[in-house]
Image (cartoon, rainbow, N blue to C red; front, side, top):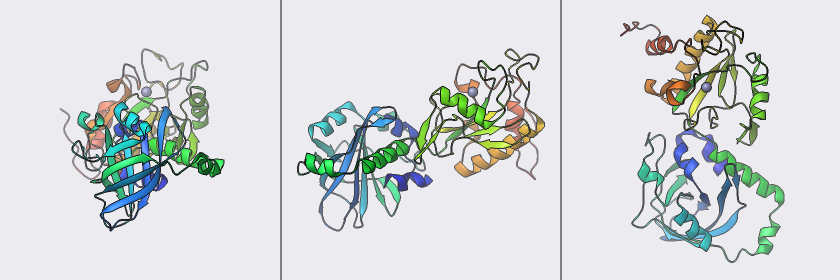
Length: 334
Ligand SMILES: [Zn+2]
């Protein structure tokens, strides 16, 4: 169920919600059609950034579900919610219900949503929406240790890998431009995607996404000859700009800071014409694919105290070209 949900971009739960989630409860395929439902599922809590506790068996008793088989997904955000779940009785619905946001319907996640005790989604026919269900999630006392121990180790590992992947999935909401600068200790810009992957592996930028491990922090690299080299998949959370990891990271190979690379000793001092052409083409495609507004296309230096991607990166001209639709009239410079 988690794998299915993360594959569909229309199901995207905002990155801010995913990153604030302390525990998740998954109740698959609740048979609808009756007023009161009772169904079993599992719960896991975050132990570290990319580590979750093994499945604890739970039972949901409640009402307010649709007539069709429905998956229920509860994100516990507050410590109070975590305590309730741990003590064996977590109430969902009721008066404090906050509508659960989706990227497609709520572009900006608000503080109200993030300070809610929990957010409840339901999935029907593979599509998520905010749930109206109410009821109680209790620890499943019938599921003894014996049953727990009967679950094969490989199945638990598969489950945990799906949970981690699920929380690492994004639907892009913006784009950040970077330059690669030099690899410390090597004093030269990276020659290949493999160089960057090795360097990022050493820095611990790894991420488990769709069951595979990726190291490179960016989503795309643009080589000096204009070749576009894919990094981690677009639906995988980035590791290139703190607080902006639902933005896609594109890194142009070179060091375009006149302060850090005044004479070109550390590689190209400005992007080549081929790099800029590839960059524009790539950004146009991503912008259309994810409906990214122009205001959400930024330089790393616009959102963080860094010189990246350098003062010689022609940001203004890139934005102008993005505004200018092929076949349209080029806008006058302000
Ligand atoms: Zn950067």
